[in-house]
Amino acid sequence: MAGYVPAETVLVEYLTGKFPDAFVCTETPDNLEEVLPAIQVERIGGTDSVITLDVARVDVDVFAASREDARNLSEEVRSLLRNDLIGLTISGAVVADVVTVSAPAKQFWDSTTLRRFVATYEATIHCNPL
Image (cartoon, rainbow, N blue to C red; front, side):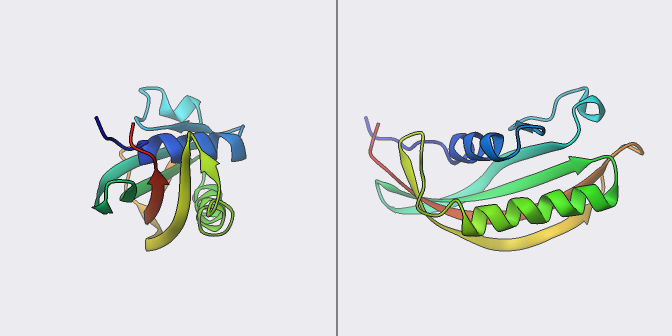
């Protein structure tokens, strides 16, 4: 059976290593305010042209206690994804490219104790079929 290393797995593993003081996840926990800063990675679509090349579209939400902290962390994530991640092998998959689809921007979140910035990326990931 053919398959892909999930893009979320690749990005969560990478970001966890780069931000050991942040809570990196695919689902926001009920106690989000208690685990700040937090980075949520969620695949929202994408394509493939060959079985070993996944072009994943992912949202990366960054949560922090202040607008400035959320913005700064979101920009740091963007810089690393666009400059450092490309060419690395993570969980058996090679990241061939990362493109910013929508740059980090402040988004509403139903809480007065945290701020959220959201960005969308397209990550091209080469992996061997499972």
